[in-house]
Length: 369
Image (cartoon, rainbow, N blue to C red; front, side, top):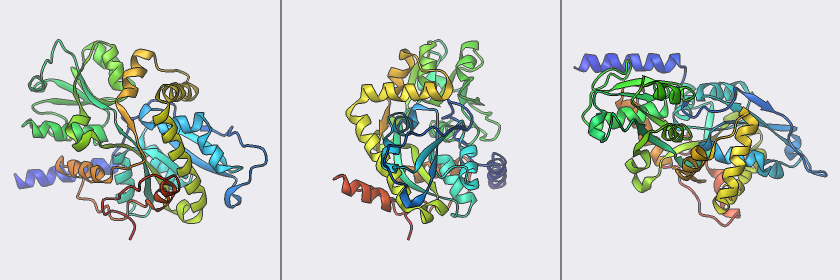
């Protein structure tokens, strides 16, 4: 048994390397690395530290609402002055991490799994998590004709976005807690885990090739629009119904060289989040408008409305839940126990929050020493 578990861990590490990172392809609506260089700079503005531009990455997904709205409403550009905000839209975590490592972007909105793996793969040298953005927005949606209770999941085919991604790990952990045995690598066992790109998951559901899916928004609401039923909201599995789904990362090199620019982006993020929470309907429309600009297609109301309601926008990175998600990946055999010390640097965020009269956020003991 021990040798089998060791072999599983080794295979998991091999897959993690080949991916090359645990992906967050789950949050993958939008176009590949679309570069938006038409930033609107206010007349008379000055560059911060003389820097011409800052390159910001995000996914075309509602769980990246801060970046979508901050871009569409100009909150980031307002704080950056004459330093132009340039945006790239990604479909998956690995490509955004690669862009960060190569200098193609400086700051990014991204999920927990690629953040963890980008940090550990570089031995703690590539990135820092500098803020939170969103919690929630992940559901288990099933075909109600085939699955009517959690016990009915046994023997069924459940889609997750990608081997080792955030939702895949969450489903594997939940399945294990239900007493269901699944080989993490092959996805075979008491329940069949079918790794399926979010863009084609609704079609797979309609064709009957899957019986349900553990997916983020807006994919979950797309399945509901096709007749699916929400069997489980992942929020219900977490203390206070909160867990990190999106955080903000920065290249350590860029953070060291341009802290004033990073602070300006974080100020824009805090202002964006404040506006989103104060104006939810306008913010929802703004996010959808940016999705349409990035991908050429807006979300219909029957998908947009329920998806938006399930996401909580927050400045708090919910650091303690990041460590729990890492533990789940370790238990699944997809990751060796990672050293996450130093993954957070919330110094600038807490400065911005203090200036705004808001409470500081915690790094769960994983901040820069």
